[in-house]
Length: 361
Image (cartoon, rainbow, N blue to C red; front, top):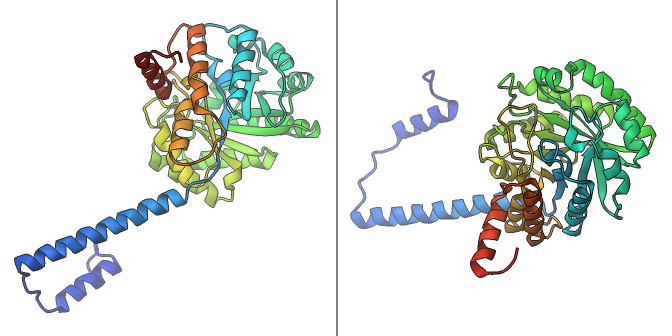
C-alpha cells in the first residue's frame, strides 16, 4: 500500500485490478445508467435534506439583548420612558427572556447610567425572565436592590480582551465571579454567563479552542445555568461554529447549557445560527433591529437582528413564540429615536413593502 492510500482506498484499488475489464456501454445503456445515477443522486439529496431538517429543534428561546447590549454603545442616550416602552413592546410581541440593562459604573457605560430607574420602574410580567448584566459585587448589590431575579456575568476566552475589557486577568476574573455567583445564588438569583471572543479577538486574532473550553467549564463549575458563546467581532463561520459546539458538547456540556450570540459584521450570523440549530442549540441571543456590538472590539458592529432570526425560525418551522410582524414597528421607532436606520434586513424589506403598498409600518 502506498503512503497516500487509506486502507479503504487500497482495497478499492485491489478490487479494480482483479476485475475483468468493463465493456463499453451502448449509447442507450449509457443513457439508462446516467438516468439511474441522477435518480439515485436526487434520492440521496432528498434524504440528506430530510435528515438535516429532522434534526432541528421544535422550539427555540429568543434571548433579547437589545435594551442592554444593543443600547450600551449608542451616543444618543434614550430616555427612561423610551427604554421602558421598548421593553414592554418586545414582551407584547412574545419575547419571554430579555436583558434590560447593565449595573456597570456609568463612567464606563454612560448610555445605561439609568439602570436603577429602568429596573425599578419596569412592570414585571408573569412568565417573562428579566436579566441584567453585573460585573462585580457592587453591581450585584444594585441588582438586588432593584429586585432582579436573574443576572448575567461576562468574560472573554481571550486573556488580552479580559485585561482590556474588565481590567482583570482570566484567573482573577474567575476569582471575582466565584464570589458574585455564590452570593447571587444565595440570594435566590439565577446566573447566566457570557463568554466573548469565542471565534476571534480584536487583540489576539485567533483564540485557541482550549481557552474557550477552559473558561466555559470554569463558569459552569461556578454555577451559571447557561453559557452564551459570543462572536464578539463577527468573524465566525459555520465550520468554526460546528467545531466549537461539538467540542464543548464532547467535553461534557449539555445542549441546555449552551446558547449562541452572533454578530453579523461579515454577514454570517444567520448561517452560523442555522448550524447551531442543526447541532441542537435551543437558545439564540439577538437584538432588536440589529442594535449593538462590542465597545471594546474596534470595528465590530451589529448583533444579529431579532427580526431576522425570527424570520429564519418561522421559515424552518421552529416555534419561538415571537410575533414577527410586530417587530418592525418597534425597530423603526427606536431607529428614529437614535437618528438612524437600524440594520435588520427583514425590517428594511418590510418597510419597503409597506411603502410600496401605501400602508403604515
